[in-house]
Length: 341
Ligand SMILES: NC(=O)c1ccc[n+]([C@@H]2O[C@H](COP(=O)([O-])OP(=O)(O)OC[C@H]3O[C@@H](n4cnc5c(N)ncnc54)[C@H](OP(=O)(O)O)[C@@H]3O)[C@@H](O)[C@H]2O)c1
Image (cartoon, rainbow, N blue to C red):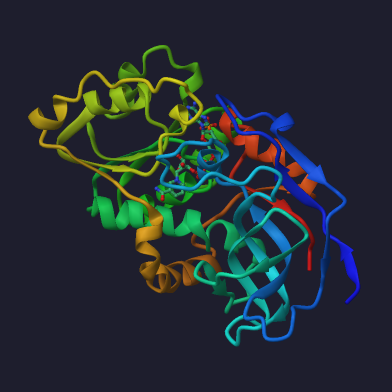
């Protein structure tokens, strides 16, 4: 069978500290056959959209005890994406799919455990990397399941203009809560207030004293904190939580590239304020995806929810797009277009 070129973005070296573009490489010489061998039960796909997710950083480090296994050097990065099926040995996957694939033009997906058939194509296909993908279900589980919000409660979201955060804020508004978000640029603060309907928003990079900032926005304290960043923000939030508050620990992006993670000094407040702090991994909640789809699809179709994507073109743009997330360069869900169909 004739082989075609299969451009790939591969990991060249393991990362210490902040990831660098020089640690990834575009391999333009790989080839692939566009026909599966007879009897194969794999799925051969053409990748359309790739999702840049902060968790990939963990797999770029060679740590023995990591929850996610390190990537193999010289192989395409493995991440989530949306793809079109070219050849399939699996009856369930014949057209469009989303799930774990490779940062390359074509992938052979041998394990279909993390593959989902795309049923609804009335919405942009790229949405399956974000609002209809991991970011969406993460926001849903982290907010509704972990925080059990009630109408009128005070909600704070960090990294609020990102893939997950923009949804959490809108879910909070739909639940009748008062919601404030933080983000790192004026453009993002404007989006939070004027596009997603946050009651207030601030640029945390312009604030000298986060504790005082939160007191200004929440004179009565915070009931629910959706934690995306960790570090100093978490410490300031703990000081501003109300009695019986809930904290959904989704991520701590400010810590992922530090050699020594920062400490949080006021943990005794968990006791004195009877706070509930719960971390979660979205992978443990995939069974809730159909329930989430039932909620989110009508909201999208009725225009009751907005979703901002930050789209770059081509595998060669993928390393910079991924790294940019750790500097707040992305405005909304960061994704890479490999091909449009
Ligand atoms: N628990 C789970 O299963 C799960 C699943 C998906 C995602 N997550 C976590 O959810 C969080 C958001 O992920 P996402 O995909 O939606 O990414 P995102 O928010 O779209 O992008 C990351 C954002 O984090 C902010 N950021 C980067 N470095 C920072 C720092 N040092 N301090 C404060 N903010 C910083 C930046 O925005 P600013 O402009 O605001 O700085 C950046 O745009 C991450 O912590 C991620 O690890 C967890």
